[in-house]
Length: 101
Image 1 (cartoon, one colour):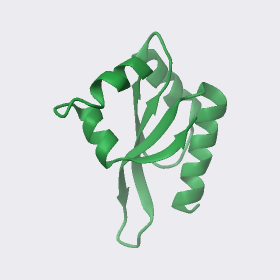
Image 2 (cartoon, rainbow, N blue to C red):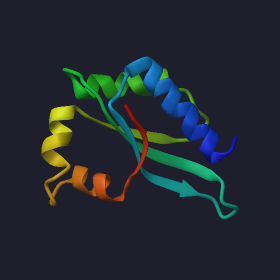
Image 3 (cartoon, rainbow, N blue to C red):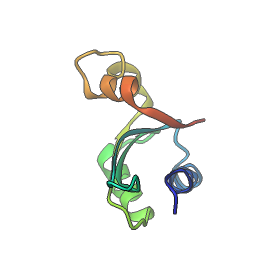
Image 4 (cartoon, rainbow, N blue to C red):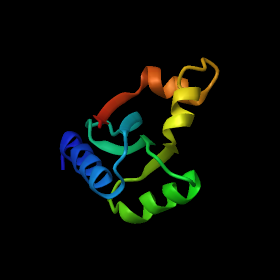
């Protein structure tokens, strides 16, 4: 499966299952032939328990490629994405928005 199709499929599954406000691709690894071999997503969604939500996402998404998911609540994202010393700010500046609801 091509990178674009895979990322679209992942976004679709996340949107249908978890209704995020935003999904950002903030890291990806490609092989020497240009094939996607792993990726990292930042998912902004409303939840009372970020760690539990990350676990739910890992259990819900079944892909052959290794991936990581980092969840922020909308309030956390609003606060940290503008703080130049935070990782969220790095993701916000360098990442690629795949979905914005």
